[in-house]
Image (cartoon, rainbow, N blue to C red):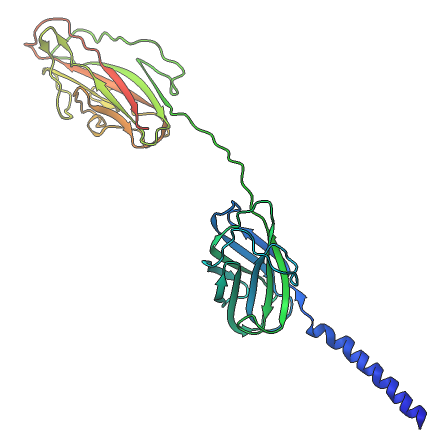
Amino acid sequence: MFSWRHMLSEEGIALLLVLFVFAAPVAAATRLQERSLFMQSDEPGVTTSYTVSYRYATPQPVGSVDMLFCNDPIPYHPCVAPTGLNVSGAVLSHQGGETGFSILSKTTNHIVLTRIPGMVSNDLSTYTFDNIINPTDASQAFSIRLRTHDTTDATGSQIDFGSVRGQVASGIALETQVPPMLVFCVAQQVEDDCVGTNDNFYTDMGELSPKETLTAQSQMAVGTNASGGFAITANGIPMSAGNSVIDSPAIPTESKKGTNQFGINLVANNTPAVGEDPQGIWANAVASPDYGIPDHYKYTPGDVVAYSPNVSLMKKFTVSYIVNSSDNLRAGVYTTTITYIASGRF
């Protein structure tokens, strides 16, 4: 009888030990997996956003997440709040993976998320908080101590736990400057990028006749990095001999033989055959409307003949000149000097 009771006692103890071994891990908290913290800005004291990511480890209903911001990541050590940190104005702007959370409470270094308790998956979960003020001490790393609970207010026993680490740092400022640039050249012929011209600035258009239209052309190239682009004006009086001046149309007008007419445009023409369309890939650099109509010419001193509204690097314009004369035009040598001025709108 004594041996039987003694045997039962030993077997009972063994059974209790077996139950203890298998039951204990079920009640123990496990670590959150793949934990990370992304800080939109790590400048000390700035207002920025934090994204906390992790995988829930225990397949158990979760109703709240406790996030405590401390210098030390160890969960059972006293929590010293990071200097300058303030999460009291935090806003939960995005959540992925396990969702449905909202902010239940928040202080300068503590946020509690809550939701209706529900089972968790093994998907990576992310939570982004805007309007967080970074710590100001760049010499000290800080941590977010994380705990999950089956209650909705982060009370009771924890399910999973873990920490993420971060640190602010004063960045290295790199600064450079692109100088203002305006490249402009004018001649009878110019290269597309103004690296060269034919150095010819004079054209003899020939002898005036009421039966013939005299023509000439010159070129100019321009480019600028000015945010407001460029403008080219044409300046100088129309062709004249003493007090006798060949009229210039005030509006774009077709070439008319037998009339006194001096005009220009900046496009290819058929009547007479002279000029070329603007050349270059920058479509925003164009001839002004009054000077961009084929076979129509005008000239008003000071007019903007070409422009761009913003940055335009190297565009070449060909200027066409026409002169017509009437039978009663006063005899003389008719000349003019047209000066082109390019301005950058910096």
